[in-house]
Length: 295
Image (cartoon, rainbow, N blue to C red):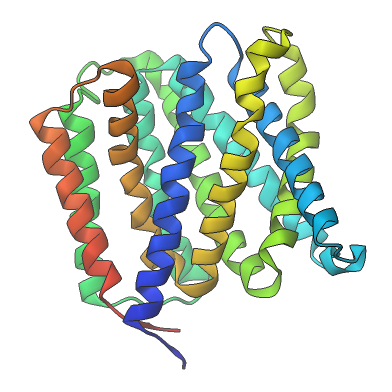
């Protein structure tokens, strides 16, 4: 078995950390878009501009069309379905229950990623990895509880909560496919397929929820394409190097990045619990960085 070194883990975690930071901007776009664009409209515009950018890059480097052909087109399509509708499920849950509660439930996908990695990818992780994962998970819980998650639960939340759990499972399954595809395909191929399929999957639902047709209103969301492409590229690079069970907990850092965005743009002051929880997440991530695993 080939060992994954500490250096490999460090490099992979840095890639995924960068991708998570960039995706935090994309996730926050719904808050910036309030009253101007629906979440599906934002996602569709992101896919359109992202795919256009990828085509321009392919043309710029004069790569032959055959270079980006894949024998796993069906797998790419399934991955696009999982990611697209996993995201839609979480958006739905956030719209129909307190957003903090929906986010907390959605973070279950980190646990699902670890479980699926062990079951389907035969990944083995040590007790030290489990310790780091538990530390990061506790940190995420501290952040959510300190922000008021689950303090006002209502029976009407049961359905959206179930949808959020389903969305978390879909996103976790997508992460497994990203790991599989990234081992066999170039990052450009993976990006081209998922963005192409994403356009088709989101087009009809987006058209039915479209709000503003003014160019000036939609331009900022078109600019999200390059940001999302950069984020996807970083995550694919990370998943080529290390296990999903090691990289999954790094997604908890989204809470810290989201808190930073809230502080800068929406005057949301982080509580002591948020600061403590973020510190625990960071500690868990640092421990994972310096551990090595076996394939």
